[in-house]
Length: 612
Image 1 (cartoon, rainbow, N blue to C red):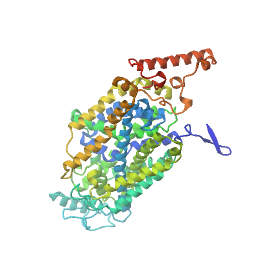
Image 2: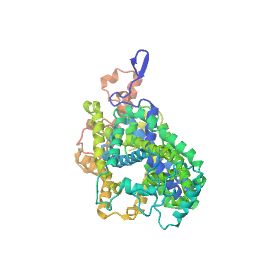
Image 3: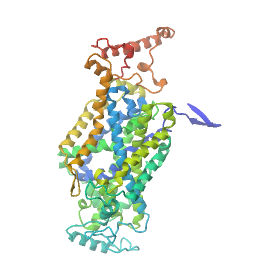
Image 4: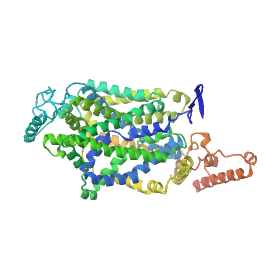
């Protein structure tokens, strides 16, 4: 359908005028890529790869991608697209499990709060890189300790080229190796200046105003990009989802031209096939795939809910999943080429400079950048890339919460004033993130019928492989991840600091808060359902809501078409009457099977459609 805003220039109109749609399919793909490709691709995957057998880790990694990652990704995209609802609304298919949607909201809330704190720290490093000399280059700063030992000596040499500096680098490296304990300038800058971490998790200390200001900038940027929902964020992702690849490529080209880069890449990729027999390697591969793609956070369902009904989300799920995993592998080359160069200059094995998480992003890699000519330029590029990677994920986390609220309330006023909801969620997120800007912050930082639905939407049924994965393989893999995580659990530590019991209790409570939503809401739904026995109430609670199905009336065909009266049927051609009566008979038969065994406590017309 088209509308004309300028004479002679047709403009596409949204298929779903009430909720809106993506401007085009590229916006959806880029947004989903930005959501899936996040900080973990850069600071976690390369470390897991070298720790778990280098190139050998790729085997379990891609097996988990095929049998768990892509099937779950396709399931969530098709779920949201079919119903055109967020992570709460889709559970009309089986209202008893709406607690899963609330659990997704809780997870997205937690992740959104700490994720933006990480982004704000990247903003801080980005701003501090706007200088002639990176502040974490030398050990002659007020925050440095006697243990500090930099690879560039103790005095600045602004005009020294990399070739002329080689001798001093080797001499400094020898001094470093001879020390019993070395603390790099970048580590002390991170611990004693940026974090200024307190001595105990119970001691909050003061709010770090520079970090608080960067947190406000982070939330403001996210709000501006989502001010018009997917209409505005869909335009922003043309830059935020693509520019990181340009930066990665620039850093990769620079990295592989450095001395020692090949050693770093060999360390990253050299296969240790004996580790494939280690269950921990498979557990790490499965968890990395699961968390990297962002399954079960609600974001995939939310983004897909703004697709047009007949969009080929099967194709999209494969493109996005493969792109995400390829990015992880590519980022490994970028990271380990630079770390290989750093190890070469320190005259130490690559394993001694390799790190992951914040240790890689804010300690190891920034220190390696100080060894490059024009180091502030490379630092600006690196931290700008981290900011964009973080924002791509943060857009979807915030939109997940906003869409869930708007869909759940569903009034015309709330839909017209969605910007107010977005602003409210952003402000609350900022306020909840304030404690993480203190000196304690680092311490806390139903299926057969659904197959028919997918066929109705895409025009072809899900391939047999995906049906098998949805029913058997993917649930088994997820169960394996859960059991493996419990078995491998160790008390959390930060360096030598051991967390007290009360803080671990809070952590476990936060982890369980998303899970308990499921049984709590299920019990609530069962208690409110009609029926004389528990079994009848359970059956009713599992049945689909009458509103389940395609959001637009034009797509509610077949078993989702409104039941016609006898007069309406008689007025239609013979063939159409027969087809309609067959569909009605099928629906009634399914309803009869669903409520078989009940004592007649509910009327047939009160039962939802049988899609569940």
